[in-house]
Structures are given as structure tokens and as C-alpha cells.
Image (cartoon, rainbow, N blue to C red; front, side):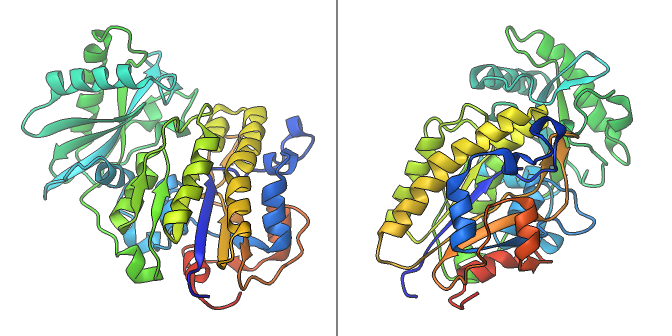
Amino acid sequence: MSGLKIAVLVPDGAADRPLDVLGGRTPLEAANIPNMDRVAGDGMTGTAATVPAGLPPGSDVANLSLMGYDPATHYGGRAPIEAANLGIDIPDGWTAFRCNLVKTDGNVMLDYSAGHIGQADAVRSVEALQASLGDSETRFYPGKSYRHVLLVKGDLSSVQCTPPHDITGEPMAPHLPRGDGASRILGLMDSSREVLAAVEGTPADMIWLWGQGGRMELENFEALHGVTGSVISAVDLVCGIGRLAGLTPVEVPGATAYLDTDYAAKGRAAVEELEKGDFVFVHVEAPDEASHMGDAAEKVKALERFDESVVGPVLRHLGSRTHPFRLLVAPDHPTLIRTRTHDGAPVPYAVCGAGIVPSRARVFTEAEAARHGPHFDRGWMLMSKLTSLADW
């Protein structure tokens, strides 16, 4: 199997549970996804536990698993991963926080993304925060849209924080940071209100801090798996894992990490990367965003666009070449329409290509994957299996 090409395609949060609004079907069951169905039918489908017991079911933990790293030994918070992709060095003795620009009414979390704030408004907002609240022990760094990074001097890793996307529509008070050092974080969050109120045009009225941790390192992906390549994602978190692993993040014009992302551009970029190299990891955020909105119809639409414009072109490209390949489709974690947040249940996967014995599944769905197998109790082992030269 010399020259094996490998593609990993990740529809973030695609897995779900049956919904009355979809006639008792999950979004995967309701969607028209012939290319993912073909991967499952021509190859093998099963399930993988990407979130180890005791860890939060976030995209940080789950994508670490999908990239072949055991989160139980490698996870150190979301913010350090995003900081890595932004080129932010975390000094020894400092803590990085994910800094969301959010919209509230003063008591209730209305929108964890401040209406998916535009980049220009976001940058102006973060620059104002740095000018007013930044000092020798506090530094704000702009990221993308509502996702930014704060560095604070001191070890604040034990502060208990809640992701804002977990509390949409809920009172904030029960979910505010707590524990040793929380007063400092709360002070910054409170002070941000006055700063953002003076930023003309911004839809954000405060910051929300969470996902903290110190400097993080990963073993080299090529050393672990014998292959190297690139990561395609509009999300700093996913690109950050890739960068820490020694993979090359690829910026795709038109990729927004939202429902309006350019799926076709991501599909074309994936094909280009496979022409140049042997491995590509493609992540699309849209199904997850639709889930956080509680919009089943938009989630189905996002899955169909992902299937048509990402899975289809990559599958056709790999199938048209003479070199052996493997293609894996898998969500990182379930994101439930009903609760509008992440879930730690195992995810379905489908894989086809060289050395894959067909399981003859009919479709790519949660139920069909659970019916067939194999099941990976340690989801992070899925990558090792994918990149090995042994038959499945």
C-alpha cells in the first residue's frame, strides 16, 4: 500500500437523536447524503467514543481524538490550542482563556456568538478591550468572529467555567466562573460591559471567559502515524491542533465556520492538498452551528451541502486515481438539536478504500453504524487504524 492517500472529513456535531420535527428521524437520517451513504455501503461503518469519561464533550477533546491523540493525557484546555494557531506564545506561569464576544440582556445569555459578529466589528471590539483593560498581566488577542483569546498572568487553570454555547437562553448567574481566582475573571467580564458599550456598531455587550489552560504540546503527527499533510478548517481550534501536531493549516477563502461557509471551496482545497500530499483533515463547522441554533432544517441542509460539495469531490478524486486510498467520514461529537449543545455519546463513522472489508451498510446513520461496527471504545485509536497498512 505504498503511497496511500488518506482523507478525514469531519461534519462537526453531525450526530444527533431522533426528532419529532423530522418525523422521528435524526438529521443524518433525514438528509439526502448519497456520498456518505456510499462510503458506508462500499466500506465499513461503526462507532467511536471520541470523548473519554470525565472530560467535557467539546470540539477540543473530540478533535484531539479524531487526530489520534488520547485526550485523557493530552487535553489541557481549548484556549491554548486556539492560541497556538494564532501564533500566540503563552509565557510560563500564564493562563490562556477563550474569550467569546457575546450578547446578553444583562441577566440571560441571548447569543454566545453576538449574532456571529463580523470580523471588522470583532477586531474593533477586541482592540478596545486591550486598550482599556489590557496591562502587564492581561492581554487580549483578536481571533475570528466571536472567538478570541485572553492571556492572564498566573495559574488560573482551576477556575470552573462554563461554555457560553451551553447556556443559550438561560440565566447567567448560576454559570459564572467560580473557584480560586474566579474574582479576577469575573472582574474582567464585568468591566467589559462598559468598554463594549462605547464601541460603535458592535453587537456584543460583554465577554465570556472559559476553556482555559497553559502552554500545550503534542507529539509529531508524522512520527506517530507515518504520514503528514494538512488541515482545512475555518476554526482556530482545529487548525491549532493540526499546527501543534506538525500538520499544515490551509486557509480557504470563503470559509466562515458558519452556515454560509463555502463548502465547494473546501472540497476543492481538499482535492488540491491530496494532489500535493498524502493526508488531509477537513473540518466543517456548519452542522454544529445549526445544532446550537436548535434549527433541524438548517442542520439537514448543512449535511447535504457537506455531502455534495466536500465528500463527493474528494471521493470522486480518490476513486479516479490509481494510488490506494482511505477515506474516513466522522463527526467529532454529537451536537443535539433538542438541547442545543454537545453530547459525549459515541459518534458514527464510515471508512472506505484499500484494505477495508465492506460491512454492506445501507446508509450512513447513527443506528446503522451502531448495528455494524467495529466500535472503538478508545476513539483516538481510530486514526492509528486508519493510517496503518494492515487490513481492517
